[in-house]
Amino acid sequence: MKALLMVVGAALVFAGCGDKKAEVAKAPEAPANPALAKIVVKDPAPAAIGVKAAKADLKTGDKAVVEGKVKDFVEGAAVITLVDLSMKDCKQRGEGCETPWDYCCEDPKAMTAATATVQAVGDGAAPLPGSLKGVGTIDHLITVVAEGKVEKDDSGNLVIKASRIYVK
Image (cartoon, rainbow, N blue to C red):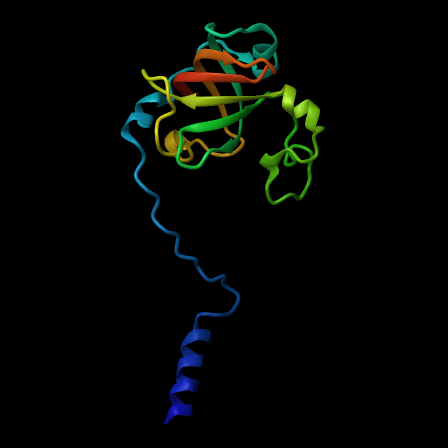
């Protein structure tokens, strides 16, 4: 009897196998922070400058409108890394990379000069809780325009405290 149950169980497990790929159940995503849905918009974006130009020209307190591609997300906070559009991700280079948004083919020093941090803060000073991933179709390598105030540190790192993020 035990052997019969094992055979029937094995038959059920392999019944769906074949040329079709098994569908993997995805865990439901946590609902987005409603405040993020107000910050991330699909309205036409205002004229923007690239990340490299922003790093070179803007100073703390300036109003910024900066365009770039999304590289990374910070877990638990509405923070992304933005990369200047002049940088080539692995997909643009024709590499078969599983994570083309890591820009692993670019020179690390060039990447430092071409990246900025965007914090979705709305009307506040601190980044809002929750991830920006999936809000308004934001994902890796999506082009966005961040509008907000600039903060720079002594090393020249650029942070945009965004009150608005436009998805292109």
